[in-house]
Amino acid sequence: MARLAGVSRSAVSRAFTPGAQVSEQARARILEAAEELGYRVNRLARTLHQDRSDLVGVVGGNFSNPYISAQLDALSRALHARRLQCLLMNSASGGDDLGRLLDYRVRTVVLLSGAAPDTLIRLCAQNGARMVLINRPRPPEGARADLVLADSAHGGRLAADRLARAGCQNVAVVISGSRTSAKLDRAEAFCSEMALHGIPVTRWADGPNSYETGVEAARALLIPGDRRVDGIFGVTDEIALGVLNTARFELGLRVPEDLSVIGFDDAPISGWSSHGLTTIRQPLEALTRATMEAITLPPEAEPVLCAVPVQLVERGSVRAPIT
Image (cartoon, rainbow, N blue to C red; front, side, top):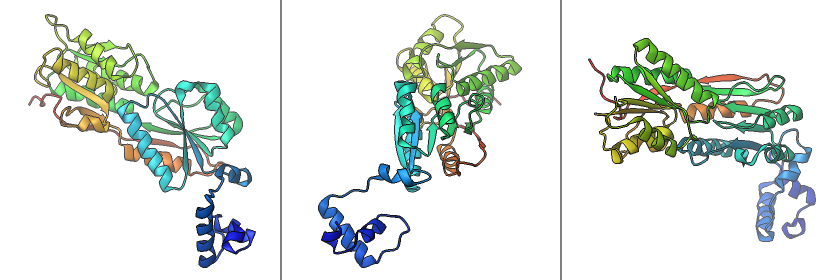
């Protein structure tokens, strides 16, 4: 490349090193030669002599979940804007495969909302890799991690209060069988708040965190002829949408006249006019911003805890408040 551009080898090296000095004329000739030769910088090799790489390991699961996919999209865009590279791994592959992240000398490992194996957390701690945990409990003793937490308990109370103000008298909460800490916090707070209103709560805690679980819960909870449930809180939008669509199109119920439904997340799909799901929003912008602040901290910085507020978003799947 140096011969083709008519420059020294050191000039070629400086042209591909951020902040290094090289004349604009020489840089232009070098870039033209690189394109002609099809040359690309080996960024993995470059990390071998740097204190920190530009690779960020992102671990998650259930990527078909509308909120998780939106979360990944927002985070990958933010990483690109900071000239950081996203190395994505699926938590379903297990601890051994996930441990390969550390083979790439990632600067940080981000665990998205939901479950991820404690094996990976321990591996990161043993290798000195910084971790950012989103909507997960504190790591095992001895492991350091930055925590980004939406206020799940407050969201559960908001959902309960809204259904109570709608006049619901017999409600249910659909948790799924995944029982991650954030989902449990939402459900427990919902049940506690409903108890203050004197309203009984039926708990459904079966199946994965999925649309299909909402479908099965609706079929079981909305039994014709019984004292039908008139309000349901799905601890994720995906579950709540399964409930809502099954009630409308399979069971023939009117939403919100016969049944009020509320979700949690505010995934983009929830705002579609065909759904109009009332939900508790954990804002993607705030979660992403807090995550990026943790990622860009120096390795020696103390772990941080960032609490992200949530809010009720009204769309029409819950009856108007009784006045």
